[in-house]
Length: 373
Image (cartoon, rainbow, N blue to C red; front, side):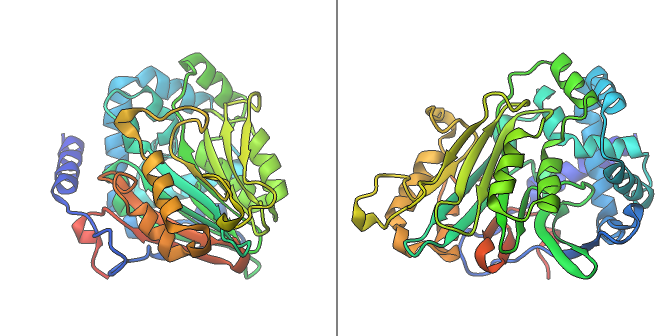
């Protein structure tokens, strides 16, 4: 069929594409779009969807083949039973109108994280990530992350600025065709990134959680970025919001000690908060490993990562070699460029400091056609 042809061609382009050099020189930031919250929800993502509609359509075709082919009943149960905020539904319907597809197909694209749990085609390493929150010896909190995701998402990467009444509410990184946030920041407030966590839930639990109004993972970040102004409030919300599928949220603030890895189950039961010490002193004071930073990949921090996917230990060693007094966005870029922290699945790197409102999002492995200015 024509759809199969488009998807096959898309994957061939991806497989033939090279990657961006991991060196600092030649870094290219993502294109920035403004999402106006005062506009009608159906219109907010129009420019993003117009610029990426061919790639969005190809992604949705791929999702149809991956999820519908493997687990059509799961897709049907979740998409028909899920309860979502009407505002987000309207936004997705607006995207569907621009792309020229039914709303339900855009919804499936937005449920990629949740539905990928039931796929035998996608490997866990294709939706892995590395996030770091660190405190400089002067007290400044830094936050950085690599997103490792299927390469078909690479041409859809965008940076977005959400504004209301002409004022910036928050900024973040996401994928065209979706309405959630993968990494985000409230200036002078907090920053957050999300990492995948292997799930132990069954289909019935997923369907029941979706029908009960539990949140889609990337929607959680948007919800809290939209409604919280500071680290303490964000930490409380991220620790308790019901989720369809479990995961890790890495949080950074603006004051010394404001950094944590939140390990979440679908419910709030069993939430673990691995925080920076309230006073992270310079290394000269004798701090032990990770006392001034936290590294999260895709495994619980109190368990050993598997030997087949150990990005944590190389990242920790790189942080220790850098030193607390030398932490900056540039040195964090170097840490995140260290193999295997940087790997064939890494499609973008985000660097941020909420205290002074600096946010950068860079392309890594991308489709060649997308590299031109």
